[in-house]
Structure formats: structure tokens, C-alpha cells
Length: 341
Ligand code: UD1
Image (cartoon, rainbow, N blue to C red; front, side):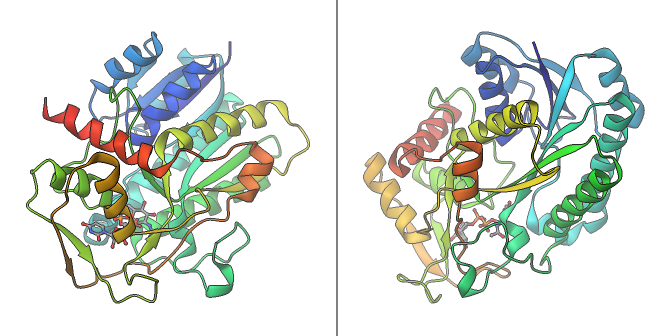
């Protein structure tokens, strides 16, 4: 049996990925400091898969204890690195915390992997590295230029990608797969795991479901005067379970395909853009719940429109995000309802 170490494995995307890895027969060790997640996620994973993943309450910045995990689990063949701080606004207020956490964790991880001869890394990156792509790069593919980051968070993703490329250049054994996520939404169909927003959500979907549940009075739509068909911003919303499955494909490929580039980059999106207003309409028709919303001014720093060209992931990973949006939105609503009880 092969073991995958998953940092940030109790988080939103991490927990869904752990479920899919275990369903595919991998053993999993989670390393997480629970700074933005809850230990009870392990119960959800166990209820879905019938097995509890190994869990290490360790901060990736704590070199000694992080290193000790690799000493204990000798059968680790690959690492998926999710653990990171991810709130754009917070990163503007606390840049050093973001540089320290997100850069320090990766440097520790790569150092420890090299020392233990673990040579397969999957890294969580973001479409944020593209900024607002120029018109000729929409939908955006992996060859589009990265744009100067507009937040420390975005900058840490770019720097992390660069660190991985530099390390792969220096250490020929190392193989890395950089996954650039578009906008992950939804929850596992069992509603046993999902996104646990911390305080007032910044992201659209938790705000939608909390408004539908009456926790928030109304959803504010940030701008209807963009240069898009209905004036609201466009994103590529991808089902978190589809996204999780791409990680399994990425790991399978690393473990089986020898003649590949040492660093591969994939966009993970659906290939379809939806506007904020379209999301609202789909949510209402999929769930039968009316959403109270109002149009307000633009949110500072927002990108007007971005969606993925995901052909490379479709063709090379043999993966496609194809869950219908209404099913995805229903899963988010089911999860919200479960959180209330
Ligand atoms: C951004 C980053 C993403 C990062 C994420 C972390 C880009 C393209 N994406 O996502 O990489 O991981 O932040 O938080 O830079 N909206 C509303 N009302 C709300 C909330 C959101 O109208 O209450 C709108 C936004 O204006 C945007 C869309 O919904 O058009 C999605 O917003 P959000 O969920 O915050 O994600 P991004 O800003 O796309």
C-alpha cells in the first residue's frame, strides 16, 4: 500500500481529497495544526470511507515535529501540500504572517522531503496567479503569463510555484505537479464534510447559503457594471469533489508515468464561466429557496472575469469536472442545513 502525506488535510479541499485518496486505496497521513479547521472533520472522513486517516497535529513551521512524521511513516510515497493561509483581505493586513506561514511551510516540506528521499509533490496553487488575463487569454490556459500579484496571499502562491521549480531544477529526482484551482464550491454529497467558514464569509458560496438560511440578512452582489453580459463578475466555479478527484489522478500519474516534465502545471476548472447573478439564479432554482440580495458597489481588488481552459487536465490527467452546477449548489445547501443542526 502506498501512503500519501496530506498537509492541511482537515481543511476544506484537503478533507475532500483525503476521502478520494482513501477511496482509491491510498493510506493517508494528515498533517494539520487545526488553525483553520476542526478535528471533528476526521469523524466525517471516517464515516464516509469506513476508515480513519492517521492524523498528526503538527504545524509545518515546526521543523522538528514535521520531520518526525516522515521518520514515523516510512511508506510515504508522495505529498499533497494544502496547508496555507488563504484569506486575501487578511493577507493585506498581515503580510508577514502570510509570507512566514506559506513560504516557511513549503521550504520546510521540501527540505524534509529531500532528506527522506520522498520525491513526489502535488501543490495547491490558484488561478489568482493569472490576475485578470488579457482578452486573448480567456479562457485562460497554463501558458498565459502570470500577472503581478495584487495581494500578499497571491504573491505567496507565485513564490511557492517558483520555489518548487527551483528545487526541481536542483534536485533531479523531484517531481512536482502544480494545480491551479479556480473557485471551489459545494460539499460532499453525504454532507458529512464541507466548508467551515470562519466568521463572516468572504467567499460567495458560504455567503449565499448563510443568507438562504437566514443567518445573514442579504447577499451583496459586488458590482453589476462590469464588462460582462449581465454586468456581474464571472468565475469558474468547480465542485470540490471533482477537484479532489483531480488530486488522485495527479498522484497516480506521478507514481506511474516516468517520462514527464519534472514540473507539470494544470488548471483545474470546468471550462465554463458563471456570473454572480447566474449563480444566484441557479441556486434559487436548484434549491427552491429565494435569496435576498442587493446590488452594491464593486469590491476593491476584484477581477472582472476569469475562467479556465482545462483541456490539459482533461487530456493529460484524464480528468474532467462535470458535476452539473445545480447538483453542486444543492450539495452546498444540504451542508449548510446540516451545519444548523
Ligand atoms: C479570490 C481568488 C482566489 C482565492 C480566493 C480566496 C481570484 C480570481 N480568485 O477568489 O484565488 O483563493 O479569493 O478567498 O483572484 N461576491 C459577491 N458577494 C459576496 C462575495 C463574493 O458578489 O458576498 C462575488 C465577488 O465579487 C466575485 C465572486 O463573487 O465576483 C467570487 O468571489 P469569491 O468567492 O470571494 O472568490 P474570488 O474573489 O474569485
